[in-house]
Length: 471
Image (cartoon, rainbow, N blue to C red; front, side):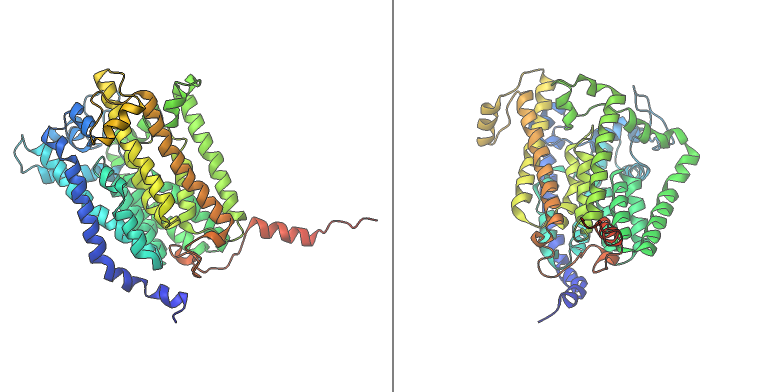
């Protein structure tokens, strides 16, 4: 009978044998995701038809709205607009958009917009496969289960092509793979690129710092941080030098952006907290809530009876960022997907979460349909009747039904976080550790001894300064 360490050493070979299966399944789901968008593509992405069929994408309209169709270069060239004058994405995403525009250029002028969309879809499908394979590798002995949970998730099928998020998701997943393979400098470089594509992977640094401090892995942490800084600067500095205003647009837009659909503040501003609509108050509430939650996660990381697994903390800090955020777009589910299956490779809560995401996915588009048509929209009974008959409510859904969808997603994501906290406090209930594993995705943290924890520090102080005995 093989030991856990022997089984872990066979992970690369097992994942290699699973590559054809996971690649094929992910490619099939990616193809179905493309088919799900076809009704909108055939209609030229007309907004009413797009929201009716719930197949919206930013890719096609932004090709025109961000000047790519006119040959403008992201960050270097501005375009006319009320509030946005440069591409409002981090640099690597803008570079991805520009490369795709160059690939679409040989097509005729009338066909370039659709060519840009189709090429983007193909590239994002490849990135989805990369993300699945990297997640499977980082999962250790549960590579098949976790890989299939990501590949077969309805969230991947429905949201893969809404925006360019899969670029950052794939880079972050490969960074996690590199860390699990004990290559911290490479992991840092990949994480730096992920941050250059989307902001959220920056949040990964907090859990990595906390766990490396608890395990005393300062050398690996230093190499990770150095790799992250070098890669991020290498991508960003040239754009900073050439066009400071263009580079700054993403950060300015993020700061000044108001409440968007999907945020809990969208509900609060209509239910007794109108101050939430003010930029300064909104940023203070969102950032303040996140910092409080992050402080709680830090205490949990340093006080838990056993050092938490890396994916557990990564998931918690990302959820803490998303729940009080002023923006929570449908495709943000892709950020969570690899972390959820690594933190909790259990189906019941995962399926419930996916159901909540599906409800929100259709809810947001059908609500926007009612807003566009300026109709009240269907109530809950009429909405359920339409769903049962596999059709969309012709006038969209009412605001109350949309709020139900919003809180369905909010509650299921919060439930995942609660379950992860419970398993951190009760390590015996963690299915990943039930067979003797420690932290398959943890790299140098896997199997490392604890060097520092607040509980141990408190115990030492108690021994050093015992309470005086009663007379």
